[in-house]
Length: 329
Ligand SMILES: *[C@@H]1O[C@H](CO)[C@@H](O)[C@H](O)[C@H]1NC(C)=O
Ligand SMILES: *[C@@H]1O[C@H](CO)[C@@H](O)[C@H](O)[C@H]1NC(C)=O
Ligand SMILES: *[C@@H]1O[C@H](CO)[C@@H](O)[C@H](O)[C@H]1NC(C)=O
Ligand SMILES: *[C@@H]1O[C@H](CO)[C@@H](O)[C@H](O)[C@H]1NC(C)=O
Ligand SMILES: *[C@@H]1O[C@H](CO)[C@@H](O)[C@H](O)[C@H]1NC(C)=O
Ligand SMILES: *[C@@H]1O[C@H](CO)[C@@H](O)[C@H](O)[C@H]1NC(C)=O
Ligand SMILES: *[C@@H]1O[C@H](CO)[C@@H](O)[C@H](O)[C@H]1NC(C)=O
Ligand SMILES: *[C@@H]1O[C@H](CO)[C@@H](O)[C@H](O)[C@H]1NC(C)=O
Ligand SMILES: *[C@@H]1O[C@H](CO)[C@@H](O)[C@H](O)[C@H]1NC(C)=O
Image 1 (cartoon, protein in one colour):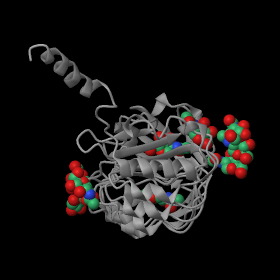
Image 2 (cartoon, rainbow, N blue to C red):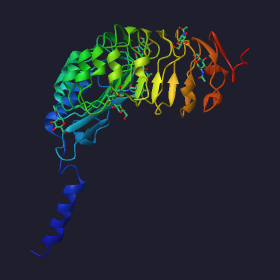
Image 3 (cartoon, rainbow, N blue to C red):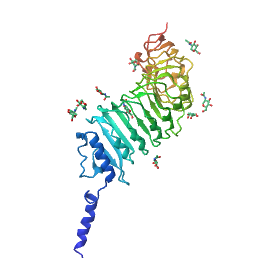
Image 4 (cartoon, rainbow, N blue to C red):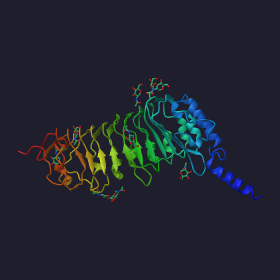
């Protein structure tokens, strides 16, 4: 009796350290992961996905501590060719799904992702995915990050994305998106207003006035074909910090614009902006300013941070003058 106690203690301890005594992996999840591996052509990247081992310890996956269900699949920089397997939709506890920097990943955004209602982060970036941004994404109500950048996505931006109540950032930059920025992007429902990254696409038309109704922190609409007036994005009332509207065809008079104190980075280069630089720019704690390649005229306000930027922040305008560019005549 006494002799058995140490033995039992060792056995008890072993049950914690040795996977053979307590397999965490859920068998359904394991089956699905092995299907995913097979569908991706058994890539070297997933060599650790051995059916004889606990899937909670496999490469690029994570298990939830409580449920032991797979809650993250984060594939990145892998030599993988093919499409996102339909089986990813059968990992119901998934909170993070990432396929990043996989140049040979092709096909459209897998429709079975619609089943992953617990997803918080969806990152499908730096791939060769094609086709549209699917409407079903607006049903993934727990999404905080939607990152679909640097691929070959086409079509228009679904207005329904504004129904994502918890989203903090939407990255759709570096695709081939067309059409207008949805009017609904001025009506995000959640407590947080998301940062919007829509640069390097072929978006056209005017920026909807509705976007002036929200307090955005970061907007990057650069390198599109946007036109018209965007003064409504500014104003003393706003809380915007970073705004990049460079390389569009925006056309408005800058003279009377008021800027919020929060603004730290303003890039307006390569547009058709006219009028003069407002005195209010002097009062900002700007870390970056670029108004080059526009149709601005008149004296650059002297003071604040404005002379800490070089000529290249101001050059190629109609008739801007004063430090750091040549004096006014
Ligand atoms: C992608 O596919 C091409 C052609 O099949 C192949 O040569 C290349 O090695 C693959 N992988 C990567 C990472 O580019
Ligand atoms: C990618 O994998 C394919 C097939 O396994 C191989 O032929 C190719 O050399 C690999 N490419 C790179 C960049 O590793
Ligand atoms: C997409 O695929 C082409 C070749 O088919 C390749 O040259 C390019 O690098 C890929 N782009 C990305 C972003 O992976
Ligand atoms: C979203 O997250 C909450 C809290 O983490 C959770 O209770 C809920 O089941 C999740 N899924 C959906 C679809 O809301
Ligand atoms: C894509 O978005 C992420 C942020 O989620 C960002 O860190 C990354 O630089 C972006 N990639 C490109 C190529 O713009
Ligand atoms: C935006 O923020 C400012 C300053 O915090 C506040 O006065 C204003 O009411 C806010 N506007 C909206 C639409 O939330
Ligand atoms: C500031 O915002 C309030 C409501 O949030 C609005 O009534 C007011 O007109 C705004 N003022 C300016 C100068 O934009
Ligand atoms: C821009 O607006 C200012 C102030 O309202 C005005 O004096 C100026 O003539 C306008 N410039 C042009 C080119 O319309
Ligand atoms: C401003 O933009 C122009 C045009 O793209 C560029 O040449 C210049 O270097 C930029 N200036 C700064 C300070 O980045």
